[in-house]
Amino acid sequence: MIYETIRQAFQNIWSNKFRTLLTMLGIIIGVMAVIVIVGLGNGMTQSIKDGFADMGTNILSVQIMDRGSRNVSVDAVYDIVESHPDLFTSVSPTGTVSGTVKVGTDSYSNTTVKGVSEVYFDILGYTIDGGRLLNYVDLENNKKVCVVGAYINRVAYGGNAVGQTIKIGSTRYTIVGVLEAKVTDLENQEGSNDDMIFVPYTTALRVAKSSTVSSYSVTIADESKLSEGKTIFEDALKSLLHSDSGYMVTSLSEMLDTMTSMVNMVVTILTAIAAISLLVGGIGIMNIMMVSVTERTREIGIRKALGAQESTILGLFVTEAAATSALGGVLGIGLGYLLSAVANHILPMVLTDMTLTVSPSIGSVAVAFSISVGIGVLFGFLPARRAARLNPIEALRYD
Image (cartoon, rainbow, N blue to C red; front, side, top):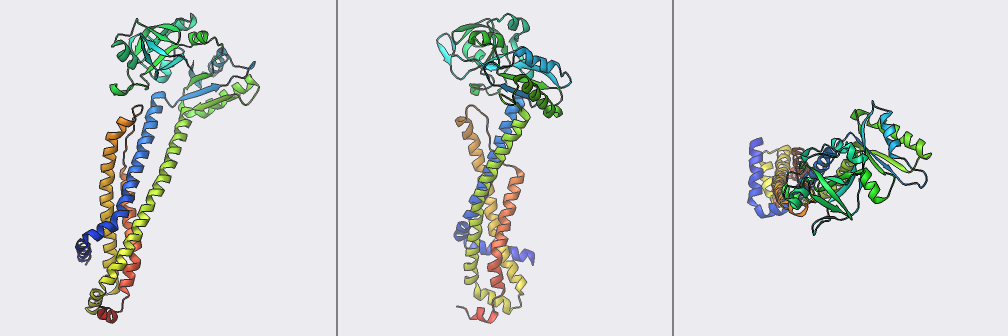
C-alpha cells in the first residue's frame, strides 16, 4: 500500500509537470537561500577563525589612552609582566608607524608598518626566511633597521631585499631580514600579513618624537587563565593611572567569540527571512492541493465507492503534497550547491584582501530538506482531510 500510494502520488505530480514546478518555486527558492546563507556564514566564521589563528588566541591586547600627565611607561608594563611569571610569558610594545612606504619611485600605500620589540615575532608566530630578526641591540641603540614581509621582498626587490634600504616617511631603514610567507596565494598578498614592515619600537618612538607606547601584545602561559591575566592587568593599570578608564584590555579569544556570535546572529536573521519563502511555498502547495481535490472529486467518490477508507484517501493526498515539497527541496539543494560553487569562483576576484568561501554544511542541507518535507505535510493536510471527508454519493454526482 505504501509503495502504491507513493507511485500514484508521483504519477499525479508528473501529469501536471508545469503546474507542479510553479507550485515548488517557493520551496526551491527558500531551500536554496537557506543553504547559500548558511554556507556564507560558515565561510565567514572560518575566515575569522583563520585570521585569529594567525595571531594566536592566547594573546592579550592592551590599549592605553593618552591622559596627559598620567601615562604608563614601557618599563611599568614590563614590570607587570615580570611580576607574574606564572601567568605572562612575554610582552611587546606595538604601534603603527605613519608614513608612505617607498622603494625608489614606487609607493606601497597598503603596506602596514609596525614598531615592535624583538619578541613580537615569537608572539605572532612569524619565522625568518632570510637575514635575521630584530634583536635587543637594535632596540637599545634605536637602529634604523627593519624586517619586511614576503610581499615587499618579492614585489619591490625581486626576492633580494636583505641589505637593501627602504624609505618610510622621511626616514630610510636598512632591511636586515625577510619573513616567511603566511599567505599561500602569491597573487593576493597585497595588504595581507605578508605586506608588512617591522621596525624597532624605540626607533619608531624617536622618529615620532614620542615617549609613550599606547599598545602592547601580551602572551598568556595558559590559555585557560586568560580571564585571570586580564583582571590582573586591568587592576595594575588602574593602580598606575588612578582611574578605571583610560585603558582597555581585551583577549583575542574574546574578540573571536564576539565576532563569531555577531556573524551567527546575522546569519540567523537572514535565514529566518529566507525561510519566509518556504512559508510562501507551503501556502502555494496548500492552494494547488485544494485545486487538485476539486478536480479529482469524482475520482475520490469512485475510490470510496470501491471501499477506500478515509485514511487511505488522506494518505494519498498528504503523500502527494509531501512528495511535491520534497522534490522542490531536492531541486533547491542542487541549485544551492550550484550557486555556492559559482560564488566560490567569483568571491576571490571581488575580495582580494581576504579569503571567503561559501561552505554549505550537511546539517543545514538536512534541516532545509526536512523543513521542506514538513511544510508539504503540514500544508497538505487540510486539503487531504477535506478530500477524505467527501461524501461518496455527492462526489460521484460531481461533474
